[in-house]
Length: 571
Image (cartoon, rainbow, N blue to C red; front, side, top):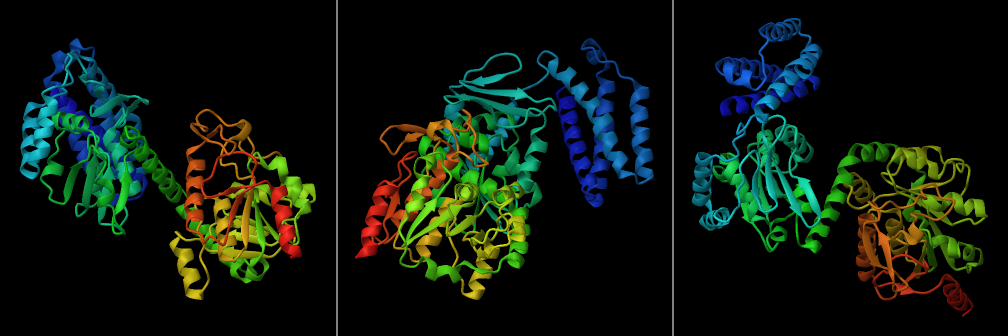
């Protein structure tokens, strides 16, 4: 019966793989996979015939006409080279039939064997040959595990469960709740999706945080068996459970694959390098007990995910923005040099002092982020320039209806292309660091490149710094949900913060506490690091009157600042 469960699991996985290949029009791989799927399906049917009596007791009656009909339909579609229909038949007939059969088998008493002593013996011997100390740690852990009878294997708060396809998954309970490490449907298919997302021909060496049950790492090797992969895992229990139930030959027999057991989190940083790509297994990251490391990895994960999600959008925007911008931001240096700058962000505290901008001294340049552009114009306050950075198409709303304004627009190289396309005022390109195409373009022409820090407020700050501003003040830079809302009034993005969004409590500028998001924390820390690198001759003021406390900022109201700046102007 165990053999049948494994064969069904493999057949389901191969059906998924075949469907994907065919829908990609990768017929070379798809047809080979289809032949494997059919052979596996026939083998499953042979095993079903050998277990007819047992299956009947479990409530399964084999309908031979149904099976023959499915196979005939599949063969006819293949003969006609109708690979769209082949994919549909695999997904709508073969796979549901196998899943139904697997569900019946897995519901049977003791049908799903969680431990495989022979597999464990091979795994531990293979690991010992590579790393005797790690093998000893695993064996020491497994001697103290707790076991229960039935369909679950437990070790404290670690539970192995069968998935609907017949593979294993891991459920972990910790102080932050419980989470699955792999899919409950088909962890191999999930791992293949994971591997395609993170694999790049630019890298031959990866550092993967999180071993799990190894599905995701093995899938990366199946894409490219020449990879070097350093795996970092801080939980010996996860490794031990994987040794008990998974065939890890792909790991211990491959000298290119190394597993670093790192309970004190000392090795991850040492393994990273410019020629390596860091890949984070999200469930493993969420399981890290060390809060500082967990937050650091989560910040990296958020940033990396953003780059991956918008890679195509970035390229499209960059191509069009090169055509639609009138010049480069460096041309405006004389308008900034020696001036005091006020950067107007869109935080909720902006409503407290935005009116003060009407009284700004003559030696002041007002730099507005795109989110507050409409609010300022409707108030009759004209900034000296507006900065836009976000790549998403819906960000066009920041200038919609304001296209005829003559205020200079500073357009990030990857900003929403529709903005530069339709805005009729002067538009100046800003090439950001960290986007290779923009860096290459700027360097070839002798232009400056600007640090983004991930947000429009942070790139606005770097523009002011590199343009030679005398001092910089922020208003509306809450970087927190002051009053429980996200943005100032009359801005399109204003909304009440949800519990999921405002899940970090930080120190506020008034000495109390305020809710923030992980992204807000990332932006704040970037700005703090940028300020720390400044020369002392460029003071940075927090005139926001609310929100997060920011290291390195001088807290002063905008009214007080304007008094000081007017004195300077008259001297």
